[in-house]
Picture 1 (cartoon, rainbow, N blue to C red):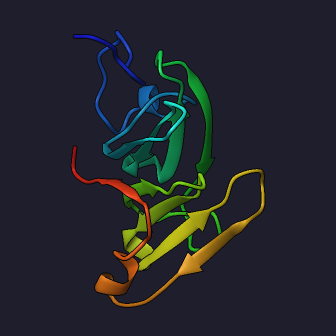
Picture 2 (tube, rainbow, N blue to C red):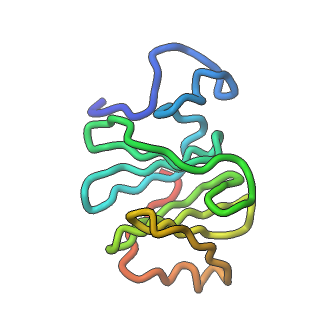
Length: 128
């Protein structure tokens, strides 16, 4: 084991309160590393995105259950483009949301799967 992100030494079922605090993961699914070495994880069970530094220290999180802007219903895939925008596949809401750096806002992207896959310069991982 090189590094562990978001875990706890305490045993607990995924639906327990043990996996709901900031920096803890409940059914993590997608993962991506940006150009600065920050790790983004789709925390599917908590309907949020969590961000860690390269040493595994928690930085921030966003999201929560819902269908409004910035909310998720089972986020799975995630990508970061060369400009630092984060793209999240919000599967339960049938959409992709884009989050831009420096609090510029978020945007919903909708369309055919092939169109959404054409994000220029994106680094992608899925089901890691």
